[in-house]
Length: 259
Ligand SMILES: [Zn+2]
Image 1 (cartoon, rainbow, N blue to C red):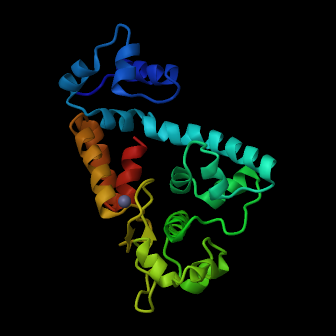
Image 2 (image 1 turned 135 degrees about the vertical axis):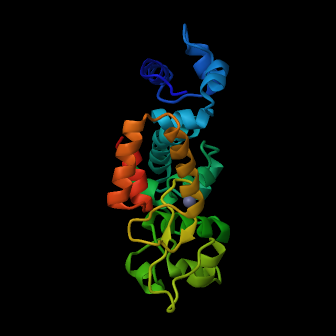
Image 3 (image 1 turned 90 degrees about the vertical axis):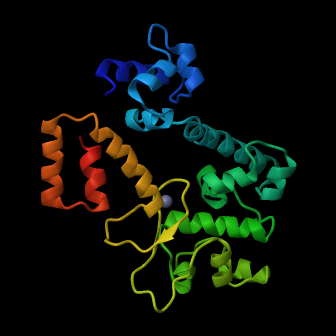
């Protein structure tokens, strides 16, 4: 059964009241006259995460990432004021939260320092692992696997010089970060999956492909569930579009997101 418009609207309103995100317990605490989450789940055969995707509501984690960003920027500004610069060591010693690992993973240490407009100390990496993590984030942000010289030209961090102080080459570091370095035999540039927490590298089958197979399968299964709730006119419209435009990854996602 399809969630009706009024119920959808009411759930969205609850999410807004709760600060922009929703968990099952938050929903139940604030639902008022609406059916309980258990009832909705049984009646509509929907998981909570599918519900959030369908209603475009943030999960608690997504919400926290956004909220913590403000905190990180203010922490960095404080440290910068006190010490004249910021380093991961200073930050760790201050016992501020969220941790430097969290910051590197979700925002990129250098990127957020730039945004906070603070001065980074020289030797900003804790250890090799920290450098590898930063490399992982830098490549993910770039969105594809560059050649070694391109990496240098783009001034991405950690620099190849920083890596060599740790006795590791850029190519080795890329492998440690989980990427296959761009080689001479590869003529199509590999890209990194567009999904937020996914660092998978893959060779796209066409230029518009943005998600790795495993993430696309997940997105696709959400879409297939939606088909069950569509009337024949809607299904006909979608089929027609797929016939004219083709069923590439981009077309499938565009067609369903624009409905
Ligand atoms: Zn992926």
